[in-house]
Length: 178
Image (cartoon, rainbow, N blue to C red):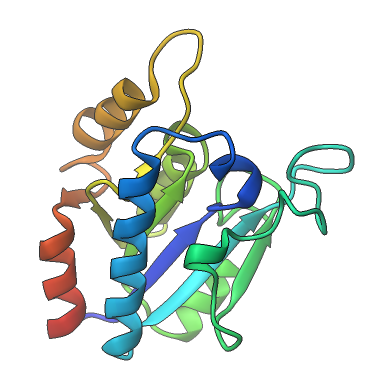
């Protein structure tokens, strides 16, 4: 039996207001998994990005706040970060070790930045990573659409290399049975 944690990364107002790919589906799936985790006594932790003074993700601003629909309960931890990886210069790894966590269910924003960096850092630290389908997203850029970025990272880069990308319903079973 593994020790599992649900991690929600950077689902913050400023990013949601830009309407990332599959925004509604991603939020609904995150809400469903957060609710399932809580109902089954699995810890949910949050990670929030501070991009510095004068940015849309400046600490303390409305844009920096975690999106209301998936906001943490008062007893749930928020790890603050300033780099793409939730592990870089934070206390996250130490905390996970103290809880003997070996499996991370990872979701959030943005696919090619903070989710990618956090996934690979977690992999390097020896964690098993599960990425539920349609629980991460990003924005179109000058090279690729948010949809293409989502598909490329989830199915070409991460799946069966750094993580297991599996349907939300399968992840719900993992949360219920572990």
